[in-house]
Structure formats: structure tokens, C-alpha cells
Length: 387
Ligand SMILES: Nc1ncnc2c1ncn2[C@@H]1O[C@H](COP(=O)(O)OP(=O)(O)O)[C@@H](O)[C@H]1O
Ligand SMILES: [Mg+2]
Image (cartoon, rainbow, N blue to C red; front, top):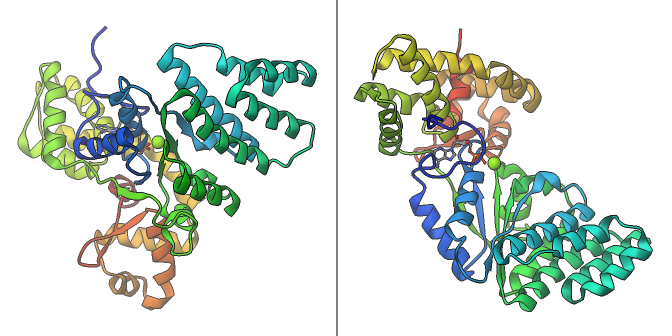
């Protein structure tokens, strides 16, 4: 099979994963030494999940270090929290140590009829027995579901001690649990304070959802984790990556074309890979081996067309009328200060300031150092600007 030149969607590893060396090194060090917990913030498609995946991959040979991965989209209740996190830890332990049977025993306790489950719980012993017992009491309605969350944290702690391992939980899409009440986050706070051998790397794509947990002064986890904002990929990183991938198929790209590719995608990893695919298609159609600006433009048009229905859903589902007007206006202006956006909309600055702030917290808009605003997803902005 021929090697794919680009990979669009899903987790990517080298050689498809580029340009995150500095953050990988820092985060891997933090994970290896359990230095601190981290919050990784970036809009969707910036490569958060892939970054988490590569942390795990780089540290896979590290002794006594477990890095369970949890997608918080799977968590809508305390019972889910308990089931998903405990299972992730067990599964990571089993794959690292090649010890089998723990996860299966845990699943058995969750599913089987109570009498058999009780028996199994007693057989397992240790911390897993403890956490299983709490689950059975919950099943018998002897304890509240919040007790499950407490038991899960107790389990992380005692399992780590029992097996002499360090644990770094990767909690992807953490904004999905933002709707939980303070109880869960207060538990996290307690753990961050007290437990030396378990750390958490949270990742999320909405500051609005995460600010009530981490960012506001009155938030339960305020200043408890180190924050990390992921940037788009730099032009030279993108240029090197695209050139290397194209070379595999005997293709080259001109300087202006690769600069344009970077500019049109804004350095957002997902779009770089997607545009890469489309540009290659365009080159093959024209039977050329040197990609020029015009193939990049063709590819970009094709990309907007492919993303059309997705952008349309996003446009109508996620924004209020006023937010739509603001985003559309800013997409046209490219870059503008609040007062200029307001002037263009023929309203007062204070009419839009709270909506603009909210859009910034949603990571739709961002500010430059000179205070002007721009639409972060420049491909989405280009779609809005289409005639
Ligand atoms: N470091 C990277 N280098 C190149 N491409 C990347 C990188 N990170 C992500 N991508 C591309 O972006 C896509 C989305 O990445 P993902 O990690 O799922 O982003 P997120 O979790 O932020 O939405 C990947 O499938 C891949 O095509
Ligand atoms: Mg993701």
C-alpha cells in the first residue's frame, strides 16, 4: 500500500504530527516527574487530542508510569465518571504490565447479578475490591451516586500506592463535564492538593465552559493547574512538513504556494492536512509535479465546499443572532477593534461588548496584542466571506 501523504482527522503521530516539540517536552517532563497538573486549551482542530496521544506514546516505556486516557464526552453522570475513569486506569495498567483480568473483573461487578458480583468483589481483593463494593452499594441504592465519584478518586490513590505506580490522567474534552456541579471539582481540588502520585492533564476547547472550573478567581480549581494555550503551527513548520510529505510522491511546491497554504489555513493543523490532500489531487488532475499558487487556490475552494454543510450547522446551531452579526462583520473586516466592529454594525460599543467577550471565551474570536479582534478559524471566516 502506498503511504498516505496527509492524514485528516483522528489522532496523528509522527511523521504526521509536527511542530509541538516544545509543549511535548514540557508536558512529558511534567508527566514523568508528576511536577504539576495541566490544562491544555485550544479551539477544536488545533491538535489537542493528538498532543495528548503523543505524550502517552513518548512515555510508553517509562517505568511505573500509567497514563490513562479518558474522553469526557463519555461522561454524563457520576456513575459514568466512576466506570470510565476506573476502567481507563485498569486498562492502562494491564497494557503496561501485561497483567490480565482486573478490567474484566471490574466489568463483571458492574454487570453481573448482585450475588455473583458480591462474591467476585470479595475474591479480587485490594483497592479494586473497595471500589467494587461501593458500586454494589450504589446498585442496591444504599449510597448516592456522588459516593461513586468519591470512591473513584479513592481508588486512583490506593491503586497507585498498592502497585507502586505514578498516574497521569489525560482528561480530553473536559468542557463536557463543566455542567457537573461544584461537588466533582471540589473533589478534584482535594486530590490535587493531597495526592502525591496522581496528576491530571485536562484539555478543552471552550474557555467559557472551563472558566467556571479553572479560570475565574472564585473557580474551584483556580490556580491549581498550569495553563497551556496551543498556538497554530508556524509557517516554517508547515512549509517543512508539506514539502516533506509531497516529496514522498515526487511532488514539489513553490515558495509562494506553500506560504499561501499556510496563510489560508491559518496554521490550523486539521486544515493543513486537509488542504494538503486536495492540493495533491489538483496536481494529479493537471499532471504537474510542481504545485503552484493556483493549485492551492483550487484546493482551498474545494475544501470550503467540502466543509459547507458542517459550517452551516455550526453557524446556525452555535450562535445567537447578534453573535452571528458580530462574527460575520469581523470576518469581513479581517481584524478590528471593538469600536470599529460596533461602528460597522452601526451600534454602540457597549451594545456588543458582552457578546464579543463571550465569543472570545468560546474561542471563536481572539485578540491580538494591540487589542484588535479576529476570527480564530480563518477557514470558517473565509467560508463566511464567500459571495
Ligand atoms: N501536530 C500536528 N501536526 C500535523 N497535523 C496535526 C497535528 N495535530 C493535529 N493534526 C491534524 O489535525 C487533526 C485534528 O487533530 P486533533 O488532535 O483531533 O485536534 P483536536 O483534538 O484539537 O480537535 C488531526 O487528525 C490531524 O489531521
Ligand atoms: Mg480532540
